[in-house]
Length: 365
Image (cartoon, rainbow, N blue to C red; front, side, top):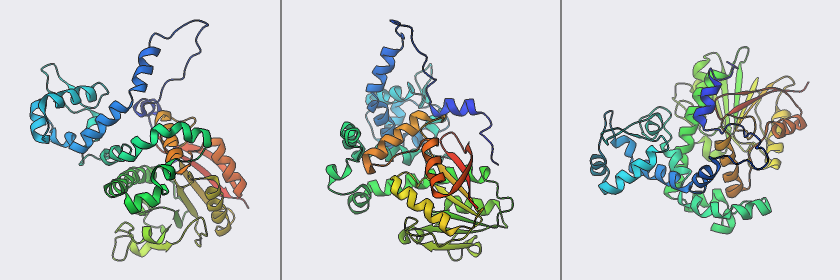
């Protein structure tokens, strides 16, 4: 229920967070600093290598046993020598491993690029390295100077307008990536959230409703409501729609949470939608408070950019948000301040997993 991961140290290591920097004595030089900085400035190379592996479905081509670069090249329609170079670059980051006899085998990370892997990150790897990202990252200095996104200047449209009108395959990759991310978060949320005493739960801006479905499956006595834009709700998870396994306990409400939330519930869940801009966040939180009864529970789930075991990941997402929509990930303090301003009494802030935090709150009486 509301507990930290069983091994926070392991989570912190697997998330790739850097250890806290130690102050250097005057004139002292970290002998690893030069190489670490060189690795950072070549950071596009491992990202491109992972994208290439994901696009080629290289992890699927490698079975349970070892394989040579030549065998993997034949399976993926690539040139053997170039394939070996790609595999060695990936293996240097722990994505695949090279054995003493020169063959390659899976690692925990490479298995996450398989389509059939639980928690697969293949589509997320593709999404985070889509062609538009390579055009946007060099404009980071402009975004830092202005505090605004660069997408309209690059493509003549806002991020979501472009994605839905001209995105093509990128839009489909985005949908698959968001679904994959939501499935993993839904499983973690079902373990985290204690619904003791809760009769009704509302998932606000909950997309296809994967989190809501997971909560309802784990709690047979609870009814739920999913609120999102009409086009999103129309594509809700089949379990929630007419004829679905959970349909008799679910109400689907088309709407925009920034305009109104015509839903009364014991628990409101708001996950990863309070990051576009402060005006939208204020509007959404105010609408929840207006709809809820005093004492209702509000659970805000967000990535945070402080006190997190996944700082490299969350701060990278924060910068990408700045580039594409001018949005921002929150610190614990900034999220708590906005929730308090809206009329919520914020309690504990606890990790759901290595990269998501839960802000527990109630509507002030």
